[in-house]
Amino acid sequence: MSAPAIPAHLDAVAFETYLGRTRWFGGKGRALRVEGVRRVGTVPGALDGGPRVVLHLVDVSYSDGAAGAEVETYQVPLSCYPDPERRLDHAFIGWWEDPALGWVHAYDALHDREAMACWLRSFVASRTETVGDPDTGLSFHRLPGHELDPETAASLFTGEQSNSSVRFGDDAVLKVFRKVTPGANPTSRCTRR
Image 1: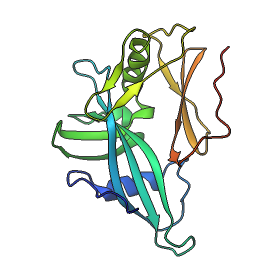
Image 2 (image 1 turned 45 degrees about the vertical axis):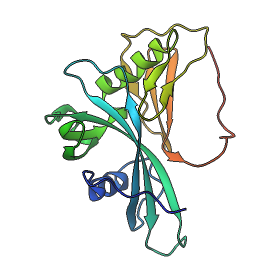
Image 3 (image 1 turned 180 degrees about the vertical axis):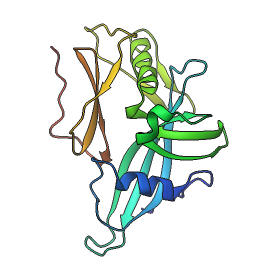
């Protein structure tokens, strides 16, 4: 199965550069190439003036011959703004003209409290209604039994090596698997406090 093409408006080099400097990217130090980018969907819950949060899967290959024709897939949620957000310079990925959004400055959404508020609002709303992106089928679901405060600020965990987790208050965590592989994750389990 070949990787999907890179949409013309996306800058593959911007993704390559960003991946190479993250903690969670598994191919650090290897010559990489972005082979394809798939849009998974748009996270609902955006407020006027806030970011649009778009999830992408990025397919990466390596040209160093260490692993043959190996292709890895990484989840890269983007927080898209029409103007630069200096507070997010450390998470800047690139800028380009998006066919649906116009010119955007794209940042890794996990570093953006406003983008994480979109995720949280989507999970809060999913308690009573189906929430998602009707164009792609991206949807939000949660288990009953725990109320989420939509005003809780997000805090990105530091020090994680292969995934990213965001804390919402003292009792809710969103874990984003950065490297995506087929099958069940043997270390995943749902826990409640």
